[in-house]
Length: 292
Image (cartoon, rainbow, N blue to C red; front, side, top):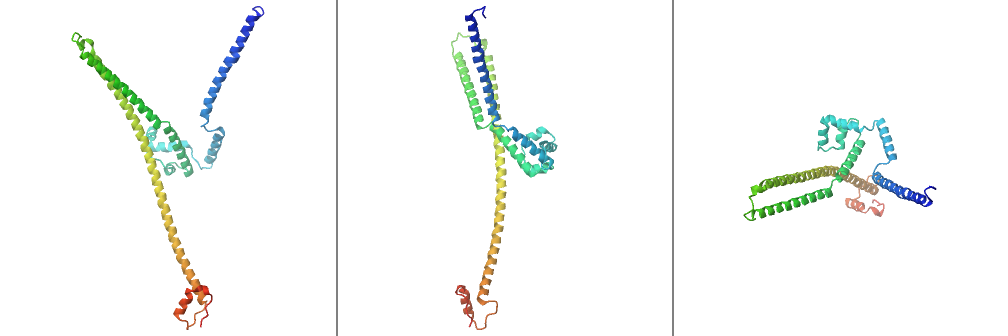
């Protein structure tokens, strides 16, 4: 540096420091922070490591105590029923926890309910990725494409009308190749419209299947609620009958106690008239009545 010169050496040194230390390092830090933010946003909805460890220990303990079966056992149990994985996954049959207990040997009801709840949560998560908003966007895109095609068809039609109404010295359409181009344009339009129609049909069919599955789930829930209501009604009727019997028994006991308090344990005298006895029974609060 001394041979080059103090000015050039200082310029090179400060340029190197500014370029490497301030610019490049800041760029590296910005890239790292951006990647860290993306990973953190994804990790906020994921299961933590301690929770995963506790879940593994819980599964191992329950498996050792014969209170839990592995998920692979459930998979193979239903695979033996359908004989084909694709057919099993494409099946639309509703599965209840009772069906799991019957199909999988050794499966407890608690694990069946827990497995079904986790499966429903996973299905809701997958369904939420394509919801009404996404369907609206697809429909808007289809409408935009249809409008573009309509405008192109109108432009082509107007161009053909202008050519047809043009002056006589113009050559015939066969020389210009308009007939072949028109046929080609019509074929392209048919292909585009057919593709759009297939896309719209696919979207509508998917939405109809989703709504049908939701409707089946609601029907099952309503059926379960109806059974619970009927059971509760039967239990309330039984309790009402028991209360009526208890009330009748208490009334008899009270009447017997009143008669005993009036007449005592002995037999009443013969001279007591029936009217006087009834009068005494009707007024038990006056105290003990002297028989004469």
